[in-house]
Length: 227
Image (cartoon, rainbow, N blue to C red; front, top):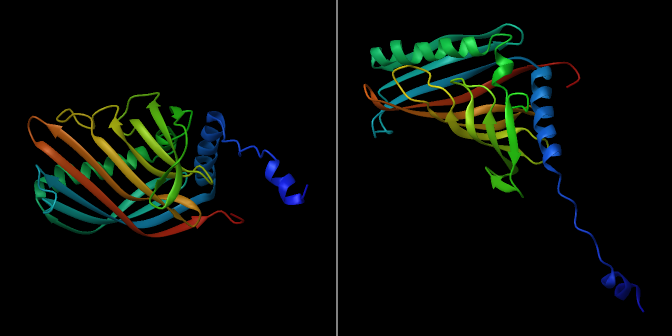
């Protein structure tokens, strides 16, 4: 029997897929590594508010510079704004103030997509999203808040970093509206998952349907030496 024939007769076991625990551990490790390594960053964020079914013409827009410092939190510097002064004053400005609160030390950890904050159940197999092989995990928040969701997250197969989140907020941000449908997409920036695009949709009897989008650009990261 030739060597080729012998090899042809061998049964090769397929590579074993990681179990659910290993996938969840990789997500925790990626979030922890980002939090430990990124000492701060700046980026440009463009906010747009759309009313009703019109998602072509923003009713209000604002562009800001976001500055984050680990252990301190976030600050925002307005670059430009246009459109409805009412939406800016009662919509965008409170949104930015809420982001400041969420990112304060002691608060920011509660918003992380880690197993301490969420029940995570990986789905079988992998999917392709934005050119990246991903695991999909169904997530259920362990506490109710406007910045936690019940839904799904997509994480990169190679390192567990976030690629996308999508779900319903577990609490409304305002008594005037219901919980928002939230989506956020991430990209790898200097080795870490950073938000690139976000979309939130909410409805209220008083204001109707509102869509808020955020586009992130011009990231400048300060990373711990050796990372």
